[in-house]
Length: 393
Image (cartoon, rainbow, N blue to C red; front, side):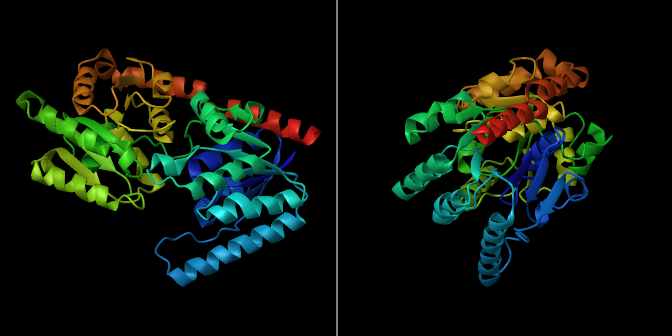
C-alpha cells in the first residue's frame, strides 16, 4: 500500500516509530514532515519518500516569516493532494488553525477521494488545558466527523469520542501508544549522567520531564519534595525538572519557581527549563531513580513509555490509563491524584522498596515489559488492517 503520513512537522519519536512499523510491512510512505524530522533513516529509506512541506518551524521567527511559511505549507499540501495517487491520508497531528486544519483542508482531501485517518493523541486538548470553547468543540466535532477512522490509545478516549462528539464506536480503534525507541541510548553510566547535572551519587533522584504545563501537577511534585526534606533523614532527595515551558503556561512556572525560592528548596531542585535536545535526553533519564508524573488530568503520556525504554520506574497519579500502564511494585507505583502528601509517601515507599533496591537488575524487566506491551509491531498490524479495510470499501 501507499500511505501519506501527515506528521504536522513534529513529534519525532511517534512519527519515526510509526513510519518504521509501516515500512517493515512493505508499505510505501510519503512522509510529510519538516526540518525537525530530517533524518537519514527516513530520507534514505527505499520505501519512504520524504517531503519537507512544513520546512522551518523555528518559534523565534518573525510574525511575517511565520505567516509566509504557513501559507507556503498549505499551498504545498494543496498541490501535493492534487498530484498524488495515494488514497490513504493518515494525520498524526493537526496544526493550531482550527478552521483550516480541522475543516477546510480535510474537505479538500475528501474532494479528491482520500480516505482520512487520524491518530487522536488527545480527544479535547483545549478542555484539558482549561481553554475549552464552543468554537473549539464545534470544529472538533466536524473534524472527527470528516475522518473515516480514528485511532486512540485508551478505552477511556474511545468512550469520550463516542459520548462527547458522537463518533460511532465502529469508527474508532484503540492502539498502543508505541514505546519511544528512537532516542540515543549509549553506554553512558548513571554516575557519569549525574556528574553532568551536578548530582551526588548517593542522592535519591526523581525526574519530572517534558513540556511544563499546569495540568502536569508540577506544584504537587514540589510540595511533595518540601514535605520530604523537612524530615532531616530524607534530605538526600532531589527533584530534577527538565523541559520547555508550554506556551500559555509561563505564569504557572513563575509561580512554581517563586515557591521553590520562597521555601528554601533550591538546593534540592535541579532546573533545566529549556528544550532538551534528543542527544541529551538520556542524561536526565539515566541520572534519575524514578520518573514522576503527578498529572491532574491526562489520558496517557508518552513520557511514561520513554522512561520504560530506559528501564526507569514511574510514579504516577491515578488518572487516565496510568493504573493499567504501571505494574505496582514492578514498573512503578500509583498515588492519589491532587494529593501531594500521598505523592511524598509514595516516593518514600518507592525508595524503600525492592524495586529501588534491585533497580540495576530489574530495569531489564521494565524495558522488556515496555517493548512487549507497547510494541510498534502491534501498532503497525492494527493500523494496516484498517488501511486495507478502508481501501476495500
